[in-house]
Length: 121
Image (tube, rainbow, N blue to C red):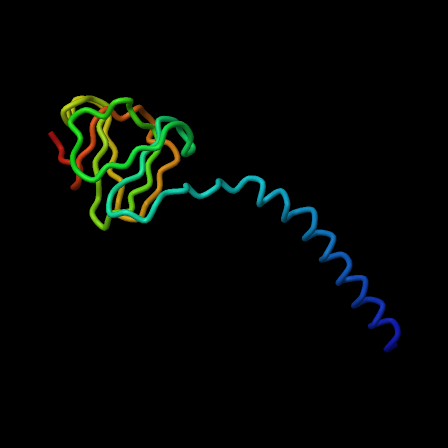
């Protein structure tokens, strides 16, 4: 009986290990890489989604962001609001990014940004 239990235990361990080897690589391949952003009190922005393209740092409001940005990492403790249109025009899309949050894709190209919560217009 002891021998059977030991063999069953070994078989279970091998089965669990082989399942882990097939599942873990698939899970890690789907994980998005964290953005590489310097430790600043501001926002890192990229011109393309997925933290790709040109990197630009924002420290203060930007009525016109040129070129527009699509992904951000907010290193500030305050939220930032990103607007699809220049000059904080709330007529287009907007997205609030809280302090410490990274957004892989804003869902639009932001043409202006300011520190603070997005206001309804």
